[in-house]
Amino acid sequence: MRTPLQTLKRAVKAFEKSDCSYCLIGGHAASLYRKIERVTRDVDFAMVANTRAESRKLAESVIKQLGFQPVVGFIPPTPEEGKRKSVVLITSRPEKGSSKGLIDILLPELPWIEDAVERAQHNRIDLGFSKVPVITPEDLIVAKCYALRNSAERFQDLDDLKEIFQAIKILDWPYLKSRLKQHRLSIPEPIQKYAGAIADSGL
Image (tube, rainbow, N blue to C red; front, side, top):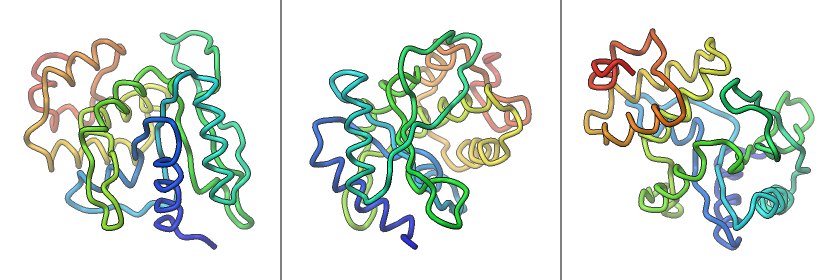
């Protein structure tokens, strides 16, 4: 069975050859900002191509290059979004003995993706095998708050938020506040005591 690191390396190589912008998100990105690394089996990316249709096509192509079968994943829309016009997630068909795929690729239909991917191009982090664009801590906080608005009981997202706020003392607060306001998001109540300036602003 393929390891997450092997999947990560091969995915980065495939993305670098594709006509798109991408970044690492999810648990692997969160681990880079936490004091204590967390274990995660799947690898998550966000990507943006010239059009949404092309983004989906390229995401499916990357997953095929990794030797997986791409399938459409599902993320429930929030009431604020309304009906979506295109697919938001391409994942890989689970391998035998697994309940989920090894790689998820989020597409620009999700409202926070384009800003996050653009800013990540200036946040390349050396992962030992390559300098990879990684979602910034601010955009990762936005992404986690978005996920928690859909499902408030996602323990791992709550824990990631707590760890990020505790580990990173210098954040772009004006940007973070503006994006939370733009997407009608708020810091979950259990995390507000760790959020400092944002909690004090009433967001």
